[in-house]
Length: 461
Image 1 (cartoon, rainbow, N blue to C red):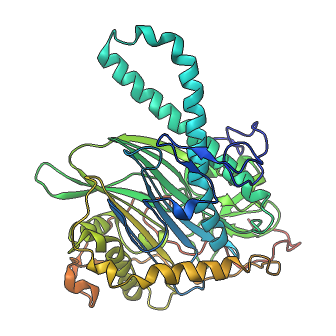
Image 2 (cartoon, rainbow, N blue to C red):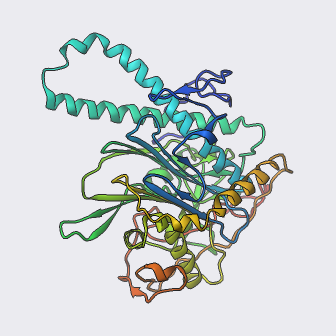
Image 3 (cartoon, rainbow, N blue to C red):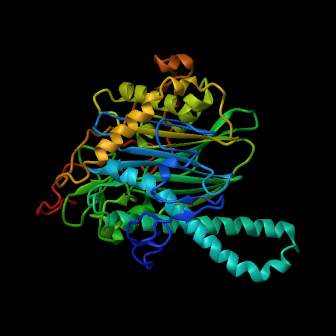
């Protein structure tokens, strides 16, 4: 990932099209279950949820912050290409059109990923036909080879899908992405295999039981901040600059070579084409993990959650939720309370959470969401209203309040049924405890600062 360009830069330019097969075709891509998937029929696909609610094995919830329109999007798509495959994603938009970018990525990226993995599989099946007669020699070696092939399959599909998604955004006629973009933390669960593709600073964690049956948290993705050594080196090689402003020394940002703009607080993102020639890339960091029986659930969330809650706190909230269906909402509620306690003068960021339970089960108590069913229709209505105004005036950069790093101990309490309505008693966390992130535990909220797009002034280094 050392260069500025994607591994798949030599691929032909993709134009936005309804189907994810050949451009110009509206047929889309047929999955292994026989159904055809295109952007035309996404809303009718079963076991695919994009607004507050639950599915067979997951729950999702998002809440608008205090900065304007909710720019976070999320998705769970079960039976993604077969019965044992699930796709999950959280997308955090930023900039004037960030909400449109994140929703476009939510709709298009999974279909592109599905298209590429099917295409790669088809080519592999053709090339492996001649070797099928020698398939029964060494079972253990073959199992290992199959796992390696599966990993390479998904890695290639992730790289191609992310590249094609960014190219689609660049040529999109209705979404201006020059100074707008989105993060993406995405996972594919296929049997006991977990494949992850991540850009930006949204995060995925794993909740597992240790030998004493106590819950432990494992961070699955890296927060790709500009000050990570490998990210900073790439940006500098491409003549971009990385530094923090004097009034927010804890937030390193990416700047143009000769202008103090736009000040992007992440090293990888969809969109943000003003910085794509200066080191910001959309190449995902891909990783693979084999799940075990001790692994209980996966949580994906935007940085509005991780700015105020640690990995351990989020695992505690989910594990102690009175019902699985309420887990995602309780994480957002906990983050909202912590924002008020830690940063009472700051504007709370948007929060989006996906909780995927690895045993494939949800509890029978669904009243938690039946009572709040209006959220889904309300969310969809707001999205439709906003997306109808895509052709607005040329956007300008806006500044949001930035969260300062706190030197005081943070506090957090056990979450139970009563925690929904009030703040429970809080336990002190260990001083100096930090999350695995590009800022080594320091938080940040806003992705862009309000500076002129082209100031004409000499930059200060």
